[in-house]
Length: 88
Image 1: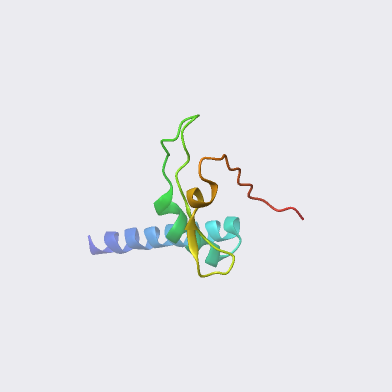
Image 2: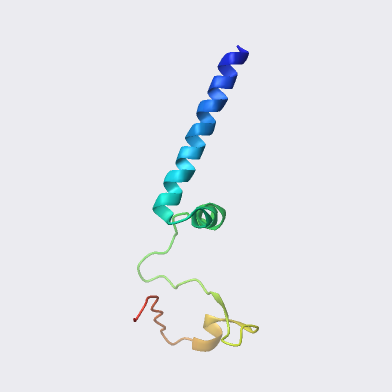
């Protein structure tokens, strides 16, 4: 029985190491895998927004790096379009 438990623990350990190596290859580095597991996975969920729904408010950091503000404080009732991307 003890031999079977050691064997199962070894197989599970090898599978975990293999999964980590595969994720490191796909993500680019072990540091990126850690960031994905630490920050992205707990926050992945399906949202409840529908077409026409108001977007949730977000808290942003100002350009000075110390002040914080909410998007709705700056836009009021006017529409706002945020574009995320690289223009280089």
